[in-house]
Length: 195
Image (cartoon, rainbow, N blue to C red; front, top):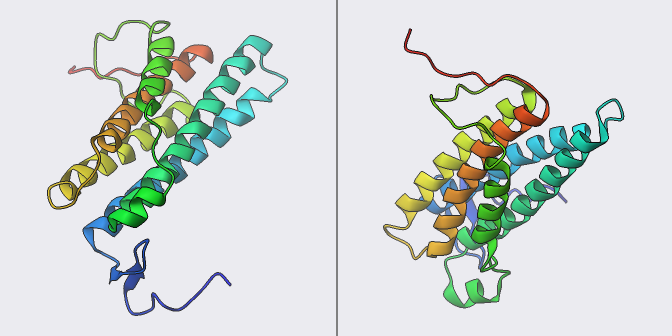
């Protein structure tokens, strides 16, 4: 059954069973990571459609397929992070799946591989240029909000450093993939101008 009615009074359960208000900082934080995951899910879907579009050249489809696999991996790690953020009991926390130790390094490897193909930035990027790139920017801004909420929660709760680093690097990844997808689609980047 999808509905339990237990949240009708404005509370929800953390992992471990303790009930808190739905606006509790912990709930806000893992809820924002959930929102981020949903936006990345949309981005992954858009990228996947490009990777199987037979009207697109094979080498471009292949690049989109690599991006798709990366995005799905990020979604899995974010689901782990959501669960950990929803858990305050240390014993329960230790029994849960954990963020892999090399997750951030893997993101950095992907970022570097894309970034070395991109032209050097000389101005601020304005989100847009293609639906895929725009969606990457939407995900990036939600990721930045998730990071702010995690940092704020860490002032009163024990949040692992590797979670903070992973979320920070995820926003970097989303910025780079927003540019990289424009490059492989041969679309024009939009840059800010003071004029």
